[in-house]
Length: 126
Image 1 (cartoon, rainbow, N blue to C red):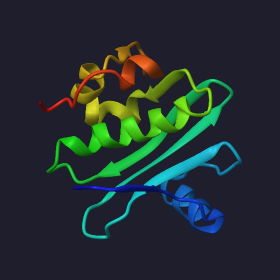
Image 2: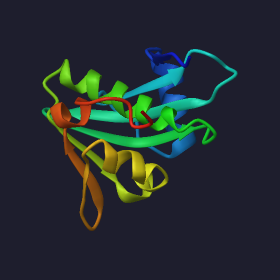
Image 3: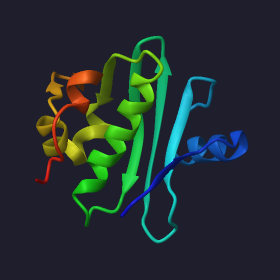
Image 4: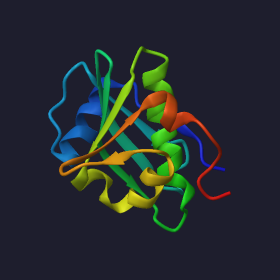
């Protein structure tokens, strides 16, 4: 089982943002794997009712990890009035099949979804 925890230490969050080339500000948040044995981490921003996945890195051997990351971000946003979920193509391309299964729509530059719709349903792999 993989457990994600929020990265709450500002210095560590700034350091993680620097690794991915993402400018840090107060709207940026992250989740990381509680276990050092399994790599899973993501950075996202929440501004008003818009949540955007800015970066994600995970072990591709487990197809559930992308869904777990998306659900964690979606749940975080939903509990803070986040409604629209955006993922730029270059960030979401590796998890495209998961995004489509989770009801994201694709346009020219990004994948978009409504947080309540994204969080509906069962695991993609069942």
